[in-house]
Length: 237
Image 1: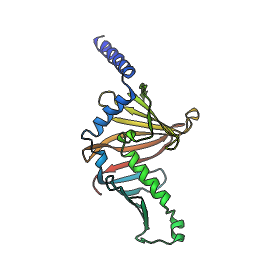
Image 2 (image 1 turned 90 degrees about the horizontal axis):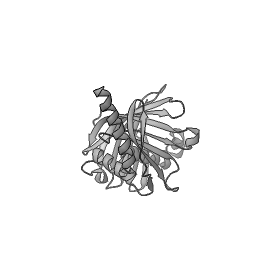
Image 3 (image 1 turned 45 degrees about the vertical axis):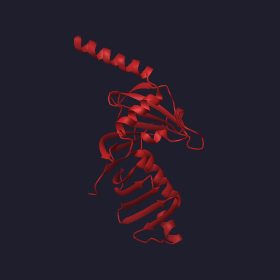
Image 4 (image 1 turned 135 degrees about the horizontal axis):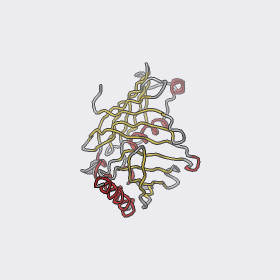
């Protein structure tokens, strides 16, 4: 009975806290957990990501992000193909299997483009910069924090949308109510259709004193269909 009363008190306190804390306050606590020294603005590091997807070979990527110098590079290896993208102060370059000046025909053959380079830059900078990236201009933090149970765990959930020129998706970020670690996030293009995806995070790697989720497992919102997993390491295997 004593144990039951303790659990009920804990449950009640989580509900009460979710009602009192604002979205801005929750975000600040999450950033303090992941980036306690405030190093994201000067982030400069190289890291490695292995992408595993069903019925496909792994893609291993060597990524370098230097925010102060506005530099991004990615060298990705999949099967026998090595592709490279660089964006240096807005200037894009690319290579395929060591060819640093590929013809237009070769670019078309392997799907190389500056648009794709920007997509990779935005993808890795955004996802691996969370939750700090939620401080970017154009981000709308909804102040009502909700409590939600997901896969057996209780979370404080932050809703985020963006100005139209930034993005149209609706995002939800799930934070551990004790540590404020980010453990799940999901996005919808049309929430009424239950489209989009959710991403389950596990493990942590520390880069530049920033705690970054190690594993990101992707699933469809609609049917929980598994899409793949990104695994972060700090040293090349």
